[in-house]
Image (cartoon, rainbow, N blue to C red; front, side, top):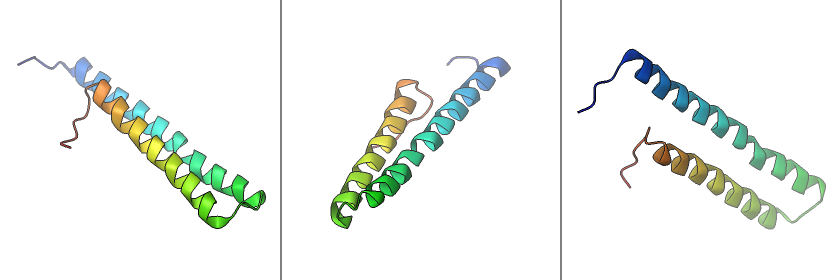
Length: 76
């Protein structure tokens, strides 16, 4: 087992914070898309489906990114 130094722990937590901040920024895109589609008077069903699809993409990017950096494991 690897020894963890304090700097390694700080680095790992810093990566988590950066990924979390990126997720917060990306999570605002569905809200913006919803507002834009509403202003264009797109039917509600299509608007909802597009926003939901974008939300799923944002979640998957977060999940894949945290797996690639090996700072999180999801038992799926």
